[in-house]
Image (tube, rainbow, N blue to C red; front, top):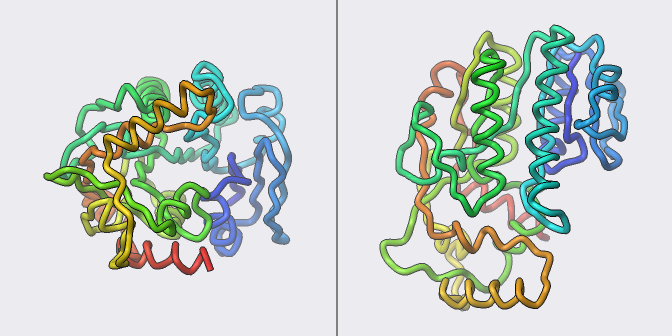
Length: 300
């Protein structure tokens, strides 16, 4: 099997690429990203490129058996929402179109549980109601709606919040600061998932004759304050009202940071992963608290 990976310089790719290259059924892996991919392995090659460029994709994706699409902007930092949409939606549509044109037999798209908006123990057949304040979620939902009509064989892995040694810097800061956002009762619940478990789900999707959507999350339901505190004492609580006031002031003063997290932090979102366990034969190796411990080790 020859596998083409977009977003190969991103956070999740750093967990996936070693597993992918070590897989005995994988003969060659090619990665593309707008940044240099620093991962090295004898069967891995990469290029700098933009997935919105159809001619680049048509040339680069020739001869591959599978596509794993990870390229996506989560936060709107130093770009307009229109630019983010162009990258996320138009770029993804280009990948799907070229994969179909080249008769690539399998396409795996990293999606997100954020397409559901909110709810508890959600299954994959729930209607999408992404938060209007969360562009990333809206873009993921738009892509899945498009794929359902045009490319029904595509596999969508709807991952929950992905943590691990290679996580985004913001998540490491969140877990290792001495402050946490205090939320009024009833405190909303959520799930997390270790990057290694997401990578394992991708490998399962490569191996098995499946299609459609799969929720991917650790089994445990947690609250964000408890997850961040992780039993630590002498933590400073920051009331959510104060946090939102501070982010509003920062925006007015011209900050280019993406403060979407402050808008959605009080949302309950938990999912059922029964479909992934049954059809993908996938089980999370890491609990929510194992995942939290990995953030500690990565910070040292």
